Amino acid sequence: ITVPIEERFAALTAHVQGIVAEILGIPAREFTKVDQGFFELGMDSLMTVELRNRLAKDLGKSLAATITFKYPTVTSLVDYLVTEVIDLDFSLKPLAIGANQDSNIDPLNEEDLSLEELSDLLLQELNSLG
Image (cartoon, rainbow, N blue to C red; front, side, top):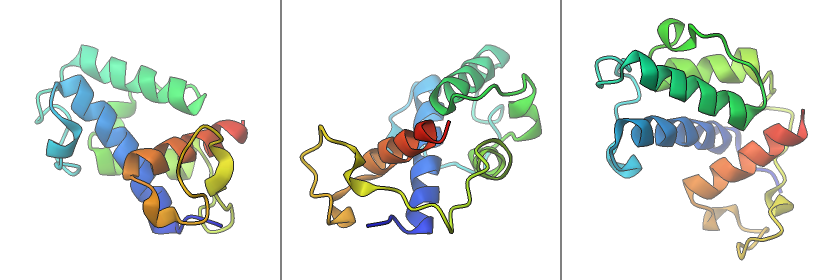
């Protein structure tokens, strides 16, 4: 079973959104301003470094120190990560729903997955790609 492209993109967006919300100290479900600039949201330079470091760790890739200046919103950052950093063709790479062995989720029903679970599965897939 594969997760539709839109859900993969949404999972990565939710993951980045969750990190930004955590750094800003607000509940992830309350953070919906994916097109608002990080600095407008109250992020300072130390917070943007934390964001970059956490994304680099999660993706297993090095990221430029200026990434949050060049891509200053969740939307622009995710677009950049998908097209330039991850280099993942979402239309051709199926995401294995059953990859998480510790889960109680029915691997045959992706509708049972929350955005957080989809995000975790996406990260597992990204990490397996190297």
